[in-house]
Length: 165
Image (tube, rainbow, N blue to C red):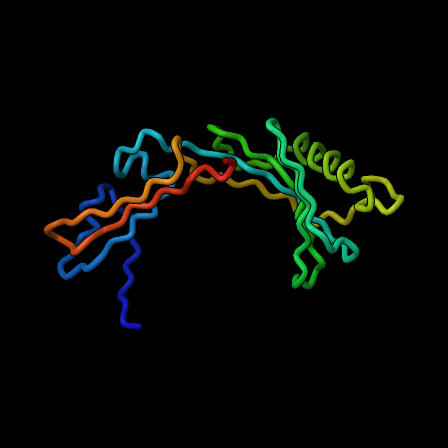
């Protein structure tokens, strides 16, 4: 549609305003802490387990103050994937998967949905992968601002909100 997109690493936000720039969307996530000096940004780590189980057809969730447990089938995946979760750990930035957390996720989801085991043991689950990731969170939620600058018609800063609230 005629939009020219430029992707590049910046050391300061002013570098995004090239000659002729109409708009800049700053979606720098965790990088916003350094790029624009947003002290409210912090990492949140999550971990999930992905299994194969064509019999699981419904989403099941249990949200508590201390944990969130969920079972989410991916109905159009060729491997009959089911996502078991999870962990939301504020101020934790390690991207590594942890065996103790994998076991905890399996224990919680199996209690919540006994049909996961189909009268088998936990060892019989068809484990496809375990994934951990770090995403941006922000004290106070999302920050969305519009600013007019001499270099560009406008730019928008958007920092991800804390998904746990």
